Amino acid sequence: MYHKRVIIVPYKFGSKGAKNLQGGLQAAVDIPVLLVSKKSTKYQPRWTDYVINWGCSADWPWINMTDKHANQTVVNKLDFFQQVGAAKIVWPNCPVNIPEWTTDPTIAVSWNKPFFARQRLTGHSGEGIIELQAGEEPANATKAPLYVQYKKKRHEYRVHFFKDGHTYTIIDVTQKKKRKGFENVNTKIRNHVNGWVYAREDIFKPEDLITQALNAAFVSNLDFGAVDLIWNEHENKCYVLEVNSAPGIEGTTLQQYVTAFAKDIKNV
Image 1 (tube, helix red, strand yellow):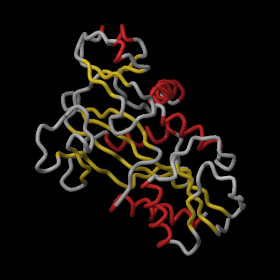
Image 2: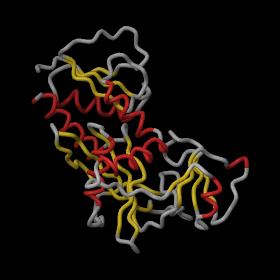
Image 3: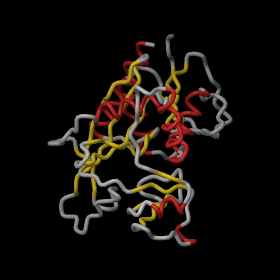
């Protein structure tokens, strides 16, 4: 197929990642790269369009249904965990390790281990996460649709993947590290606000990091994305926390996505 336009449909029109991708691709391909709102009524599809679904799970008529459902599943943390459980039956040779979870607060309390109440199933960067202690009964203010047992972690990672034909390829690996000069760092919820940044220099890669990332990519059914994982040193085992269908991208990570997309656009 000869593509004449690239159409990027973001989950929200102000997505910085989508805008960065648009700018990067415009410099890498010799065809127009357009950012189209999922609410657009003016967009006229063409069979020569190359459409990139950047995390959009809305009922936009021109989004591939497989992409739409894949995004809906990974965006919702509970749906993703349930999908991982179902996948273990269908694909036993492709297991995805995830922390223990439940929707029942009484079960969460019975773990007698620290756990998180996830009040937002589609939140990001730690939004809607309430930390609870072992055996602590969730109050009305901390009731949630999902409870996840805290798994001790030595390191946390974000692994980016891209589907090339029928094969998943890892295009970037980063590890969360403490930001210099940041005091009182929260080691349980490792986000930017709590003093953590992604780094790719001098990082430790556990034995099963890439395998778990690839398994999660396969189960997610996405064409591209980023897998968030932790490594438990005691077990020497990686656990998948979630898969992002519209990850923040800039610098080296952005260039890796631009390279992968540009190759696919020119070769398809």
